[in-house]
Image (cartoon, rainbow, N blue to C red; front, side, top):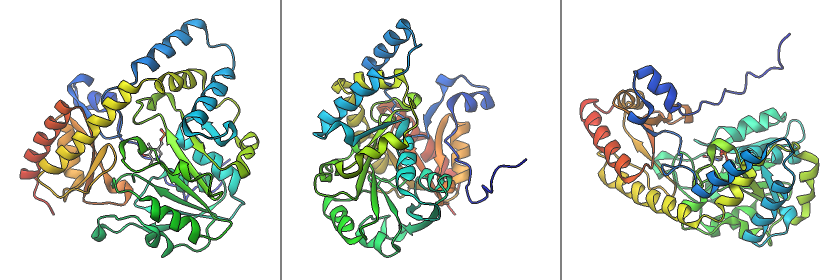
Length: 362
Ligand SMILES: *Cc1c(COP(=O)(O)O)cnc(C)c1O
């Protein structure tokens, strides 16, 4: 017995967990600074934690029905959409799957950024789709615009764009997004991934859903709301095909605690503002103080060109600062450093600059 041919799909390589690394190094978790997975250094919204605790105490024996409906309605009101336009899912990753299910016939293709988020292509392949890529050019500071995509576009069924982009931090502006929406063929869905949207000053593409029916926008509670461990996100879609959700979603995949936490987090402006403010400070601090070239970032992380990324990431980890070697993104020579608290970020810069002075850039 063997599974189907999965050789085209590379396993997803996550940033290493803090407990794993601590165990390897013989340290306690609190002696390490984890800046490898773009997580929220302020933790979860306290209101969300309270909601989870309350709900857990009341029991978890019923399916998440009311919580899912309440969250859908609250998000619809937030974005001024109809409830059916909000597809709640286990993380934004879950929404990527729902869009693949809703759109892809076997053998149809998706167009993804390279470098880029690995799950776009994984999801397409899970759904018997093919994958093509458009290149973000390092020489052009990974700039993103319609031409960069259209150069490689060949009538694919789905085009994935990421704004702000992971791992480069570059973003799209409104004009270029509408240019892309208008340039692609009628059967092409443009998916705008706004997993880091809260950290950006650009308006959300959700506002364009009234005018375009070939657009879907991804959002998550994993980053700015600090709920990565609960797996909760959503997709906003146009009314024209919003009812497909009922046919493609995995029943009750967004769990009760996650929905309750997300509902509470939406009412926690203090936590959100603090998270965004810290990230904006930290990305500036990293760009100004790291002794290597960095890419201007609109997210909660910074891409830095360090030369021997593997050696730098390994040495940094040994010294208690976990960062992401971007070789798995196809960016040999670069590391991605998530924004920590002010204290963590300063410590990371000090550690990295010492290492960079020792490990000669290649
Ligand atoms: C983190 C991230 C996501 C979503 O993550 P979930 O935890 O599944 O919500 C989506 N896209 C990009 C580019 C990301 O970095």
